Image (cartoon, rainbow, N blue to C red; front, side):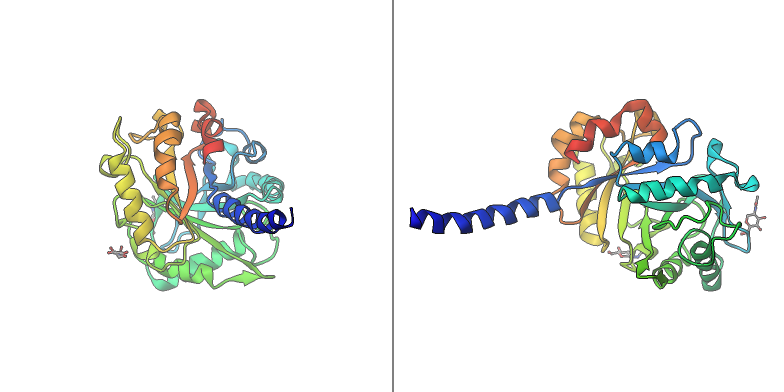
Length: 301
Ligand SMILES: *[C@@H]1O[C@H](CO)[C@@H](O)[C@H](O)[C@H]1NC(C)=O
Ligand SMILES: *[C@@H]1O[C@H](CO)[C@@H](O)[C@H](O)[C@H]1NC(C)=O
């Protein structure tokens, strides 16, 4: 009896640390919200309890002396300050432990940085208008809520000075709260536009877009290109966590959609072997509503 009890305690400890290590590998789902007025509110998005990260898309004009401009499709009109209503919803998301970023860039817009000074002035603008800087002035496009960070979805223009932008953003903090920096490179490695910024090793989360690029994504019945590309990214990029970015429905991208049963049965068990695995990113909330993708995969992520 006595001997058994002596054996059981260390065994329980071992089991406990094993379970802790396994749950540490649990991932989360990131989603882009903002580019379709028919995808529900930000509060709806967060109250599904399926998402751990929400990227508000997009700040689509910036740099070169332009006053930065937000575009949230049919959700609100920045020109009339009607996007400020989202402050309460942003805070509600954050109370649930969801990190909320503003995404700069996107597939449509007019943006590029013309110098290191231009990068610095954008960083000051972002800090004062979306993050912890400035005051709760009426000029903040999303009102007085303090977002968790900045997402870089740079798909147009030049690669220059985004490394500077990231260094400037990472230098700000207030009341112990730091700025998260996240990014959405395309899967061909290294990313043509974000490669240099990623090489700063300052990104917290990198959601690689494994779509619209057949050589590094899933193609019907073939998981090799995707898995090789995942290994390349997770062994080359020094970032907090790396995510598998996917279209949430076949129509959400030109190519790269993975049926949910293929993702959960064949792909996630392989890619989560990386210590950098952070979960899955979905484009977008609108397409997820159409397909039910996040609901189908969330227990396996
Ligand atoms: C795009 O940005 C540049 C500055 O970087 C500006 O000169 C140009 O007028 C802008 N074009 C449009 C269509 O807004
Ligand atoms: C960044 O680092 C990778 C190696 O991890 C390298 O292949 C790449 O050329 C570097 N520079 C840029 C601009 O991507």
